[in-house]
Amino acid sequence: PFSFQFQILELVYHYYDPYIFLLDMIFLIFDSALSFYHLKYNNETSEVEKMILKQIKKIAYSAIYFLLLGLGISLQIEAGIGQSMFNAFSMFWSDFYQIGIGTVINILNLFFFIIYLYMRHYRLNRKDFIPIVAVLVNGYIINLFTYCIFNHIIIQSYGLRIATFVLGLLIAS
Image (cartoon, one colour):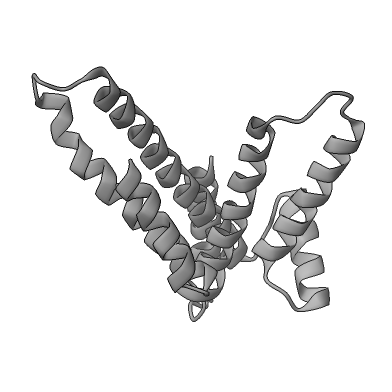
């Protein structure tokens, strides 16, 4: 666990581009999950090691699901034939201010989180910030797919647009 935390700090200091940092974090999680995978089949595994394996497995699954959600939303955006109300609203402000759609989604979700904090009548704990970190990562994943991976893809036929939209809807859900 200590080397894992050190690797995360090393990544934070070496990368200034959030997309490269995000990709390296995902690869680091998968690499750690694979290195702890042998503990599952070892008879001499302690309870602490089993607990660490369980937590890394949860983080790896969450990373996969966030990647799939961002991929699905990006495919829906790339299809350009219909959006959810939130994504359409985000696309409008993204086009209006000339910033990334994932960035607009991050700003809107931070706004909703601040409203939630204002309406809340009891003290915050650290678990309250886990969802906001997840939402921020999701915005970066959407920007990664939309502006880096699918940047040069142009879908001409309407049938292919419908297929892309349905595929994105299935992946995101």
